[in-house]
Image 1 (cartoon, rainbow, N blue to C red):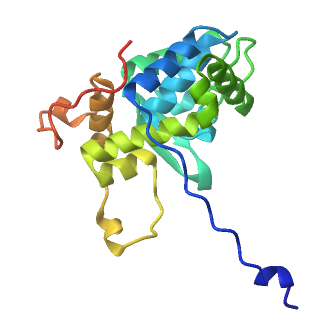
Image 2 (image 1 turned 120 degrees about the vertical axis):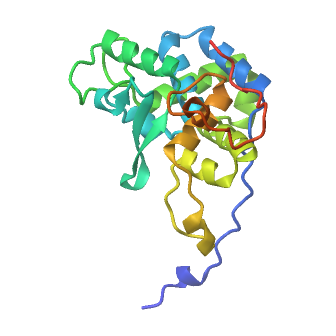
Length: 229
């Protein structure tokens, strides 16, 4: 039986207001996260992790000890649709994630990496509390509704502009085959993603192309937009 509701036109979807953050805005957000709150260590790790990897919240919260490869500076991200991929991170972040997890009680390979001070795994609520706190210190964050997904958009925009669509697509973990047929052949490997990360952060990565004696296939020099620690 035909439903009258199926004949009603759907409202037009409004344009997305999300944009890439500027380096100064990103720096201000990180400074605000470190200036207060009851767990600035966890908040700082979350912001750094999402800025380096452009991962989604689910991917970050699903990280386990077994997903952390400190030797090669990689994490295994398990995100929507059951997808899995190894994503490069800086050796500095790899070390800090490992220290953080073990200091807060992670022992077994399946134990969560991101944890509260009481040893319990972090949840989505941590993001909400963090952004509310940052919004109180930086009113423009609250007014514009900035969230963790803005960091994903910021990083992927930078990667696409400096390293091209193929690397940005791999960096984002996009595996869909929709779109023009040519997208089937537009792929980038792990080394290309690591090279983009090295340029993004200004820190070397063991899998980056230039570390293997090859010419960087991008614009040089590239100013790292992420403040080094």
